[in-house]
Image (cartoon, rainbow, N blue to C red):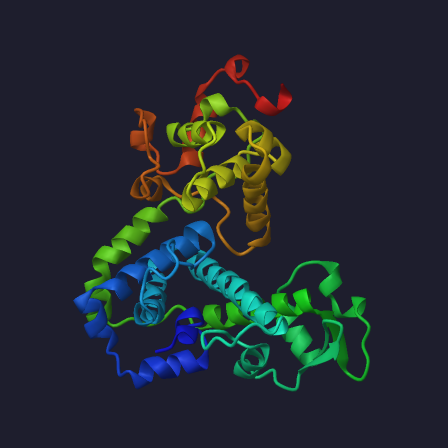
Amino acid sequence: MERLHARYPFLEASREAVEAADVDLASLVAAGGPAVERGRRRVQRALLEGTTDAEEPRAYSDRAELLSYPVARVLVSLLDVPGAVEKYAAAEAATARERFVEDFEADIELRSADEGRLTLERLLADFGLSGQVTPVGDGSFDVAATAYLRLSGSLSGDDWRLVARPLSDGRVPVDRPELYTMLREAVRRRVEEELPLSVPEAIADPLSTELTAVRRSVADIDPPMEFETAAPGLFPPCMRALLSRMRDGERLPDHSRFALVSFLAAAGLDVESAVALCDVSGAAAEAVEAQFERLADEKGGVAAPPSCAVMAEYGDCVDRDDLCETIPHPLSYYKAKLERTPDDRVVDWQAQ
């Protein structure tokens, strides 16, 4: 099992590596261990943060990283939550894009060879696109019209419509970022179309603890997401604490920053208002802006902040009050506070 397989577990070569290792999935999940733990976290990160990256780079061996993929696929299949398969597939695809763009750009810059690096040619071949995508220079490509329609069909925006593109000899021109987006969609479709799995009891039963943990995390995966008022005084204790830490100049961990920024976005703040509310500048402001951009880009992922269960797991659930005891999600807390507070006592920060 190579690093390439661990980074791109959806590739045919990665499947073959698992088969060649003669790994029995039932025995793997029964034994537990790093692959099972990583599989659980992979699903939680996908559904709640829109990424399948591990929180700590290289925290797991290549073997555990690769084997976490079939474990994650089983957990998503057992979860039975509306939209979970789609959101998981979108997160796998978004993470894959980040990785293969890094690999492709390194290849363009002629950096030293790395056996864990994926090439554009290899990815195209894996999806049966060799010969259907042709480089034409200056970072542009010609894509066979049939392949273009297949890969762009789920993308929104008039720019992706075939009638908006010049067509010559059955081929459509695209630039490099557009090709990367289309390849991301190819990954998403492959992952999504292979789920859910039919899971035998011998595999499902040993994963009951992990499945319960995932279910708790996404218990309120569709919290209220539309607010007309941004009233920081009514934010839940966890978000007020994160906001205070950021205002004090603390560099929040990635998961904490994601929780805060995604909450602010859901509460109705735009990027400029969020930066102003956090009272940050320089690198801290850039981090907030980058998080906003990522939330906007991940159309298939979950834009909501983590549930209360995940906030607690990461140590960000603090200063709990009586309302917290009955609320499963920070946004649900905020909605309840707005509903219970008289209008004349609600201070809209953006209206000041």
